[in-house]
Image 1 (cartoon, rainbow, N blue to C red):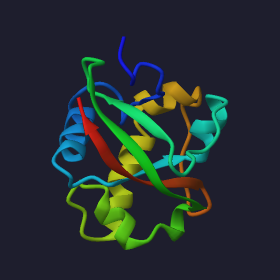
Image 2 (tube, one colour):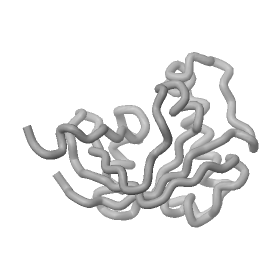
Image 3 (cartoon, helix red, strand yellow):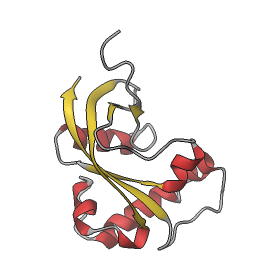
Image 4 (cartoon, rainbow, N blue to C red):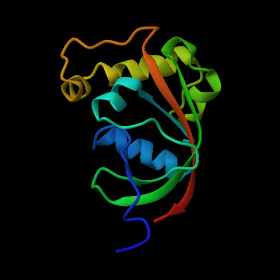
Length: 140
């Protein structure tokens, strides 16, 4: 047992190529923000991220790879996500429209709709999202 075993796990996307890409971006420092739909927190009965909270990032093999600390949290409409946040997600997006298209593909995917239990789920401008900024505090 180590000092990080008691920290909550942070899983980016679902296990597979997208998670692997996002974890690599976290580890190389290009990903310093993330976006989740508020409904995901409600479904899991979790509170929104808190400033200073630490989490263990896991890869697709469920291996702990880093500890991150939340440095900022905002709760906004999808239509109000700023460009800086979109760029800091580390996925190479240069516009909010490009970022949103990529996120809509994920949020409208079969995996996400299965997770939500709603095969017709779709986001719109008024969908509430949680914008989280973080920093890596430890590589594991």
